Image 1 (cartoon, rainbow, N blue to C red):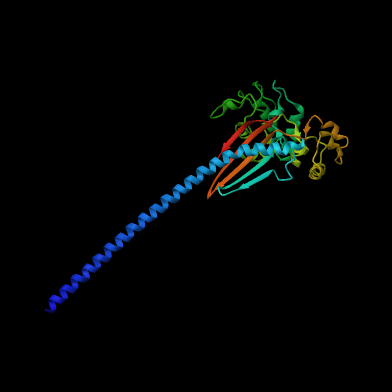
Image 2: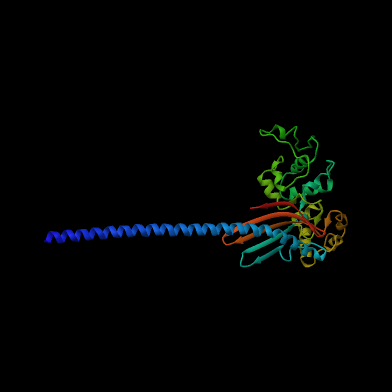
Amino acid sequence: MNGLVHRQRGEQGFALIITLLVTAIIVSVLGEIVFSVHMDTTATAGYIDYKNAGIMAADGLPVAVAFSREINEAGYTYLEKEGGLRSFRNDRGALDVRLTDESGRVSLNAIVFKNGEINQDYYDMYIRLLDELDLPPSLAGTLADWIDADDSPRKDGGENSDYYMSLDSPYASKGGPLSSVEELYLVKGYGQHEVNALKDFVTVSTNGKVNINTASPEVIKTLSADITDEMAGDVISYRAGTPFENTADIRKVSGFEQLGFNLQNSIVVKSDIFRAFITARVGKSRSAVEAVFENNKGDSATYYYRQR
């Protein structure tokens, strides 16, 4: 009798163990299912946020164009009042639009005329910028050779015959204007150090005239060898209180009373070409657009566009 009771208790205990094991397996499987569903839902939501951020960033370009038109309503271009930044927030996400003025930079393409001859005024400006940034002046010669259509190297320059076609992986020089600042990486003498030093001070999109309302001190100094650090700082201080409404106003700045006459053909106070940095955020996703566009007479044209 006792043996039967012990056997029944043993079977009941074994059944209980089996039941607990099955329950544990079911709970584990259900947990995996719930986790998988959660991960799939999260991934889907993240993908949707990523796509929406990309759409919002792309939609920011018309906002940038409208912003530039509003800035120019005064008859001159001045960005420092608002830092060139507009921010928008709503339930959908966040959008930041920041503008910089391409005419506040030194034009790389302007150093050479269309016929291949050196444009001495703008060539000298570029030489002064290179000096300001502690870069070798020979970079001006190699850039001029890259842009001009002939194959005759200048002093310290580089053409197909003496440089590009003799490389381990040869390629031809452009023989025309640069399409982007990044193209400098192809030019003799320009590496990461040189391009990083130059990228915030140069452009490929303007005719060379510099906007004194938006130029940095480094760029202002390129306008003449007679402009000192102090004089460049005085231009920045003056426009902070009273932006320049016409080019003759530069003569109101201390030190520019006479020099200002000589700068009239090199400066402007209004710009039509801007670079937009657009950032959109939706959830944890982010998308950014960088674009260069011209806003002139109510129309706009995009010269450069990159989304990432």
